[in-house]
Length: 195
Length: 195
Length: 242
View (cartoon, rainbow over the protein chains, first blue to last red):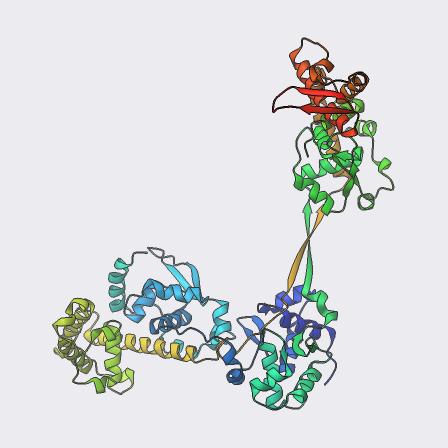
């Protein structure tokens, strides 16, 4: 084991002490150095396979325990609240299609979504409003947040399970192209949509 | 670097995720092993000299960042801001008339000054309280500091240009200025000072 | 599970909308969703709906809309392939298939997402991080020129005000104190404050004299030169030498 250089030590200490995940830029700015990528890689390498690991989630880095030790740690922590089936489907639709409007989510699921479903996902910090679509009615769209990536252990949206296959199969295109049936229905439903 | 054994990994993860420092007994009980002393020593050795360290305090163990890196966890961000006009004028009045009370500054400026103005000048280290005036109400007076002189490159407060200099330099356009009148007024007004 | 449910009465409440039911039926064909038989699917859907019975019709309007649409689709598919409206029934059937595949893919993706190593369930963050703090320190920018120019402005602005103030007839605090100190030596008995005030007609000047006299007396009382007494609120203020 070689002695760590000062920058690597400093990067490690900052990431370890921080209460929130940090981007490489934030760390570099705090340490007043041009680049910390190499130091990040060295810290990550030092911990690989140990009881602490450094991971990247949506460009932000944090230390966490490895998943295989979950059984040792779980009992002290409350387990995450179970999401309803509608919640799970809605989250998946947002994650794979973002940004996506409520009417588009409903078109894919074939049912209206209750107001509570989006609220629960927003309260969990996993999705957030992501601007309005520039079409008549200017519907609000939703997208996932950095916390979503952290929570589900995704370095990037490209890590979403099977997203490339789904995209290649044309499954991730939103209404407006070849969705006449859906669109008619979506229009019908959107008339019911009060908000 | 050798592959860490499972117990060492588990000890490390447990101490990392715990919200409070843990005793060796607590860790041993959680992991259902007779002794963790050796594992503790190995975790401590792994981090020695790095940006994370395992320390014992009164029989309880926890991770912390090394003391020599503590300065990295606190950063001081310097932002440059222009002093407000009220601030500049107040500072000038203190410099020319010190020691001077707040009511006197207000009398000279012809407008009230907010408490914040004096606070900013004191925070900047340019003025400081300079005792109370021995008149009714015992108002606090202010004077400039050595930092003030060094910031403005002055050897002495008397190096500030006087009224005649200002007039000669064309900076003072109005005729009929009289220091005595101002000073009389300052004394008069000090009787009204409420704070 | 749909197979198992076979002859039982179908509770539409179990499915979230017709698409959900259709997907369940399509899956019951136990083939790749890409090759399901739309005709078989339509028949199963209508059959299930029939079994669901009238008791659920009130809450099943959208199921009936879908049933009508599917019946229409089926009839189109069964008709000989002549000049048909655009889109063709084959096209519509394909789209329905796509829709089911898509819903199925999202359902599957959601399950895979939930099964990932999740924060605070499978992986844990540091329990007690020190935290990073940011102190803001403001560097105030002001030059010597700003300072001098600022003072010049104060002086230039202040001058006219002074003339106005000096015209007002005023007894200064100093004057009042000198006057009272000179007079109070002889006052061994409680004496009303008015005795210390010169009789002058100008009411503005009178007010200034009263104010300065009272403040001067308070100051002299504090120094122990005289004593003050007031028997009732707003009553006459009495003075005597200490």
